[in-house]
Length: 300
Ligand code: GRG
Image 1 (cartoon, rainbow, N blue to C red):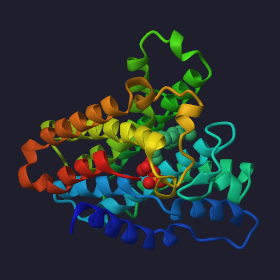
Image 2: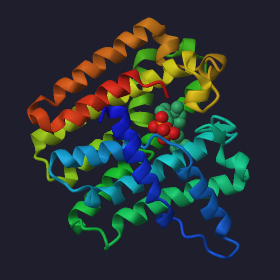
Image 3: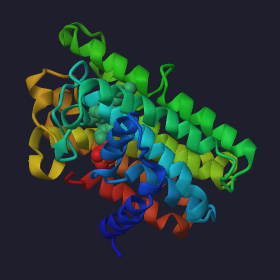
Image 4: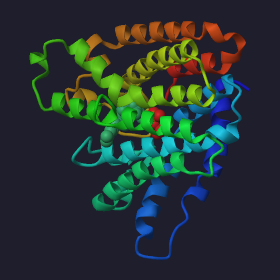
């Protein structure tokens, strides 16, 4: 099975398990659960869950054990997409090729659905029913709070992104440093979490954990660069969202800063370096190595 088929087959299995997470009550609050389910279920490459389970596998962790953490991470990722699409943020009507949550439901429900998914993620990881020690669950919760939060996490990255959009880009002291910071926090922290959580679940030693973190940071940056490239020259049908917004909004992106060719070159170098970080794992890292190539060349 090649990596594209591998990710697809994982996503199918992952999607089948989603319904169980969303029992719909027969009461008036059903609407928020329906909106949460709608947003998580529809589409999505499931890259973060795949990365988490595959990293855990390097350390011999069975997918049955790692999957609940992967579900939690995807819930949290989906919350960020729902809120990002809101008119007050990126204002996008389309997500994963279908109406964004606030379009399919309404703005207030979309805000609540995002809140619900964010909170649910922590509920899932802290559940006593998981086959994971309370010490590791606690560490995973703490790491996720940090990765998603407002102190150097995803929320902070989104804040800087918005602040930059509302300011004169030309006046920024170092655009390179700002864009790298935005990427690291807004996109990179969750991708890093996916890999690091897999390593923590598997009891990785410090050298192994750092190697995994190094890998995730490199592919995270490449992932964002490719996202920017897709925004500029991607196929809207494949990508499933409105494209060419970055240019129109004069956003600070890797493509706007470096141009297409240079951005692609930077991304290719990052993929090479990411793969190098995994040398200590030998053949056990084959899927993560293939994933790195996929990340650098994906079309959606
Ligand atoms: C609202 C706190 C808050 C944060 C929003 C996720 C995000 C931060 C913004 C989305 C804007 C964006 C393009 C981010 C870059 C990379 C990214 C997260 C892309 C979407 O992830 P994929 O491609 O999406 O894995 P799927 O749909 O496959 O899950």
